[in-house]
Image (tube, rainbow, N blue to C red):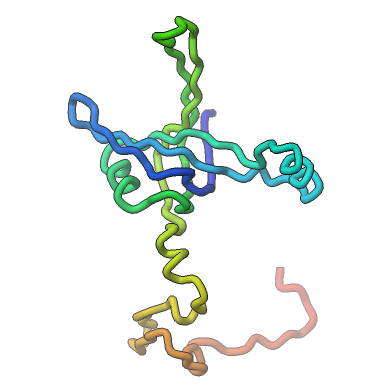
Length: 163
C-alpha cells in the first residue's frame, strides 16, 4: 500500500507549469512538523537542525491550477496522495540524483496566509459572516446569545456513561 496523508504549511509560493500536451502540473514544498517532544525540539533547534520535514508535492490538472491560484507561502493544507521515487543524471557532474516526491490525489485548503493576516485579532463570531441556520434566522457576526436557543436543549446528567 502506498498512501500518504500530510498536513503542513507551504514553504514558498507554488510553481505552476504546463506540459507539452497542456496538462497543468503544480509543485510546492510543504513544511510538516515532526511532532517532537519539547525537550527533543529544543535540542534540535539549539543544534541548528530542522524540526520539520520538507517533502515536495506534485499536483496535476485542474486541482494543480487551483492550488496555484489559492495557496501561497504560509498557507496550510492537507495532502492525500502517494510516494513516487525517481532518479536522473546531473548534467554537470554526471552523478545520479535520486528524488522522492508526493503525488497528490487530493488537496484540502485548511487556511491561507492571507486569511490568517486578515483575521488576526478577530473573534470566531466575527469570522462567521452570513451564516444561516435551518430555521432561516440569519447570523451576521453580531453577538446574539439566543442564536441557538431554540435548536438545543440541555441533557440531564444521571451519572451514567452513555456508551
